[in-house]
Length: 427
Image (cartoon, rainbow, N blue to C red; front, side, top):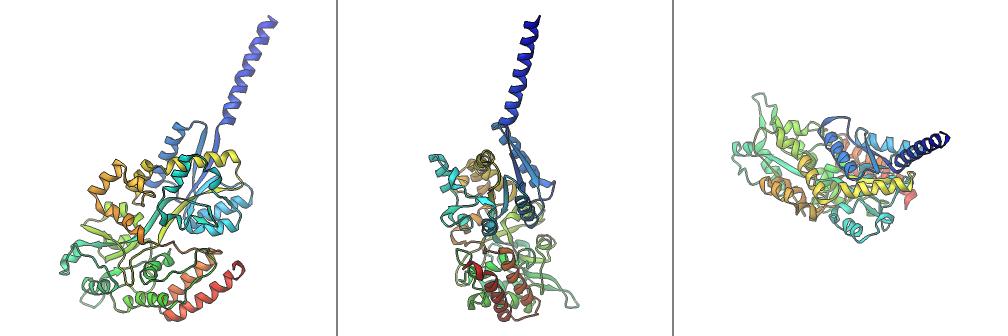
């Protein structure tokens, strides 16, 4: 009797121990993602997490939807300072210097060991790695990346007597076509602008479509110096201001969030916005539209944009390794291809564009390939140390010029002075 009781106790203990070991074996990866709760993007991320966990039962991935990019980095850094950071997070590629300065993130290089790992890391588009590497180390892995592209309403082009299949390719053509596409009512009020470039939300990013095409680079590679007062930068801002003065572009600050809606409602014939809006525009534009590279002046080009995966330093080695496995999995070519199809973001590797799914999609819907084709002439998104404050100095200058509070030259000289003050300690 005692022997049976002993055996039962031993078996029960073994089962409990086995359960405890299984629970310990499942490594939890908290994953901050920059979107409000719900909506189609959250469903896609939830689906990816579920599929990954099926294939990797020892890892539990928990997406936490943290709001906008700005809200997400604040939450991530607050959690880091309190000692309970997420294991990984998708944050802006431009947050790299800030995260390094806060000693919040670990480089990926220490996890890249096998030949497959090395091939994976070498497989991303070089343009996306410009905002992912610093000091010889890889701090970010490209995920939801983008460039700015130009969308145009082909029906409005026809109405204006323009070739609907020939969008503007230069600044001069953009201004001339915008003039023909602008409509006014009997009272002289503009009812349809020829072109609209948003200047809220990410003014510096849209401004880079003008500085890049005018041959200017706003910051150095190490994020320690800026060139806001470069004559080519001032000239680019003057061109933007002059579009408003000519009446072919809205004057003052143009909202980022409502620009696609203005396009749908035919309040703007041409808009600049992220390729990440492509799926949204395809679903909601009730007319034939085109997508093209940004018109050039001295050259062609656009800044890259969007978010990278980062690994947080205060998580455990096991969590970091598990997060690395998840990041490798979710950025694999077939998933990068599906993500691009579902969202409009650029697939982050040439291999993704060779997958049957994306080859089929690209042949059926060629606009999906425009952002990719712009990558060889794309530049790094503006990023420096103390990035939020330096970027605010630039954004404030841009909005001062666009609202007429300052001349473009004065606005950029004032922004340069403030940026120099902020970056003095990093040189």
